[in-house]
Figure 1 (cartoon, rainbow over the protein chains, first blue to last red):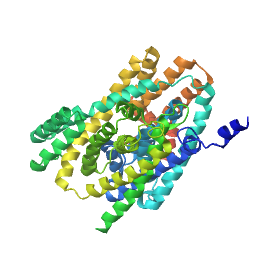
Figure 2 (tube, chains in turn red, green):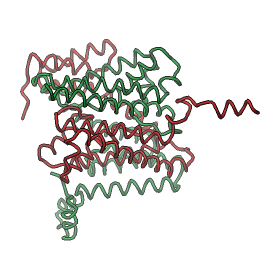
Figure 3 (cartoon, each protein chain N blue to C red):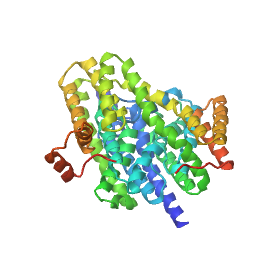
Figure 4 (cartoon, helix red, strand yellow):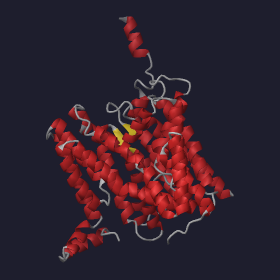
Amino acid sequence: MAIDTRITRKEKLQPWQGGFWLSELAFPIFIAALCAGVFAGTHMFYVYGTGLFNEIAIGALLQQGFDGNGYGAAAAFGAGFMLARIIEGPMVGILDIGGSIQTGVGIGIPAMLMSVGITAPLENFWLALAVGAVIGLGMGFLILSIRKATVASSGAQSTFGADVMMGAGNAAGRYLGPLIILAAGSASLPVGIGALIGAGLFYWWKKPLAGGAILGAMAAGAFFSIQIPA
Amino acid sequence: MSEWLVILSSSLIIGALCGFGAGAGVARMFHAPKVQGAGAFRTLGELNACENDPIAHGSFGLGFFFNSWATVVGSGALTGDVDHRIIPHWAAALSLWRNKNLDETLHNPRRMAWLGAIVGAVLVAFLNSTATAVPEGLRSVAGAVLGPASAWLLNPVMPAIFWLAAIDAGRRAGAWGTVLGGLAHMVFGNAVPGIVLGIVIAKGVDDLGWTRVTRSITVAVALLFVVSGFLRGVDVTLLTQLNLSIPDWLAELHRVTGTGPSK
């Protein structure tokens, strides 16, 4: 009896067994760190033109707003993705940081702030970090409360189609390689040939096609510059 | 030169914060659904695909590192792969280097958080500080190639993949995915969030039936569509395209709230 209490109660849990690092309370802290970084990344993109934690196409939406063409598209796209992911995250147990944080906090919220004329968080690095952290804390607690209301009360009998979405997500990444080769071929013939050679080599080395295609396209583009349609 | 130093030091802080959160979130994914994790389904799938071999994790990350490097040079966008793929895989590679016990390494949020912070700081600082030093000509090539490719991936390739996955997941998932996906394309401009929510609702109903939980999810989703539709002025666009006149109160409501169709 005495031995039991000493082992079970006094011994500290390892981080992978429980305790703070796996606790509910720690989740908003991790999300706050991520959001602070991503939001400050958008600040870097705004001020220095580099460092946005997102894809080119989505960055282009925000750039459209910076250029004075309205923030509507970026705000709606970002906020829509964020709400969808915040609803989905607690149900499947995995918050998609791409949709919720990189697109929602990194694109949607800055676009909303800018559209109503609040520019300070994007202009000041430290303010950006603070605003991002506060948003992250809020999001973390919101997700935990949705989780309490849904999954915890249903006894986790359903994964809400997590396996289906995991399969589709894995499949989507594979399409990038062929798409890059197609885009390179449309940009110019030398760039297209460069992308083909790079992709071929990467395929031979059993690496993702996309990386090779990009490097090949850039190597070719360094020698044969292309005209960018305005 | 001083601007370069500002970019470098800011990037160190940003990368460390992102890496810390992403590392811990990824390790927590392996404890889901008991514990709330953060990352992505594809991240989890890809980490498993590397079968805990440090070399495989390292080279998988390296492929996307070149991708991100090329992208940030071309457009200033780091790509989502920095948080989704490079930091998790490189932190995993470092974590598994000496110790192959998964519990103590990849599944350990404390170890992954600190390694993620180190990887993130170095990575983001490197990407941002070198991106500004690359010649303009090379940047434009990367932009011209990666811009269209990632735009196509976002739309229509990913919607089509998710759509087919929903259809293959049963008649209910197919029906919900189709309806919400089509609506989402018109409301958000991208079908993926709608299809995902359709799958969530349909699979929830498949497994649990129409309980309080599934009903409240459905109501939340419906609200999301209605509110987003109003914010983007979809109602006004629809009325205009149906050749109907817009009621004054509706036009006034959009004017007061500063919402409306985006050009």
